Image (cartoon, rainbow, N blue to C red; front, side, top):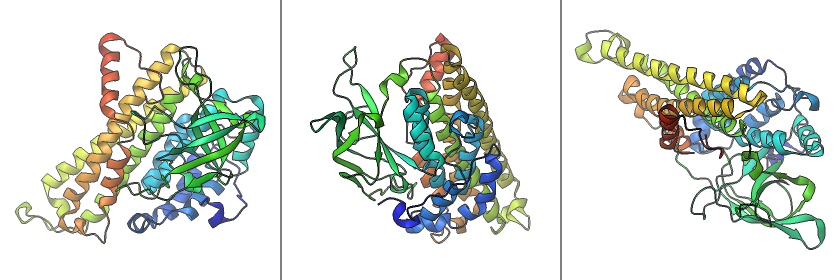
Length: 409
């Protein structure tokens, strides 16, 4: 099922402006209002996604030459952080949309850019279908693009994808698949197929059952003999041949989601501590009169603010690398992003746990559903292991070793 079945065939979209932060800030109260209920009932946020889309927030990076706002990475990162404060699911849903628009910007032909950027300006939403369950690692793909015997200028696409975040809300699925001919070094040559979600042979399953990020629409996509014209296939493997900000761009948005979860957890802690009873040994009339509780809150705020600052710093360096990519500034952006991702991941898990310490025993009631912050944090931070980011940062510091170019740092 696609979002068309809920919101209709038309996708009105507000023209994106340079003031994207003000636009998203105005939406936040409405987006956050029923976030706990959506998580508890696993109610998919079709209306909320439509609201974000109608405000132009799916078109922020469309280049100016194609009629878009072309906002900075710093601005986009703040948009993602704010969406994630309201509901981390809403922060993650458009992630792959923006990452693959970046692949289009880097590797699409002029005609592909013209067509697909125009679609996005018209309100189209994209989602990823890249990771599979069966490979030895997440980098291995069994999904293939093979020559179409009925069309010399086309392919047939076959495979199964999992963790296809946002697929239930998407007009197109951007499928990572292996091309018939390997690369010169013998490795598989991969591409992105821009496939309409309603194409014949495409099935999108609502089978995501994770403990957190429950409403991201991250289920299974099945592809059976799907017809794909050559003009809808964009190179992917070659994205990593030269220095670029592709990986750091993707990762800094993930860091923003984690930072948003951390801030949301502290916001919930502040709200609920006002209702908590003081500990009898503290001697105060309110829970917030307990100096040990205040100390815990202060430490948590310092951790979260540190993560937020590191995310901003990383985004600014990604902006530099994206504008004029070279080996030095793309490596700097990747390292700064790795640092921010580690800090934000730690802050999100820590703050969403400290929430209960601050808010007291009542906070564990199922009816409050405050566990969603920790569940969202723990689920999203598993996206890619921060332990390897720490390794790359250490090698950079001690041996000036540039981080690898593979999209995960």
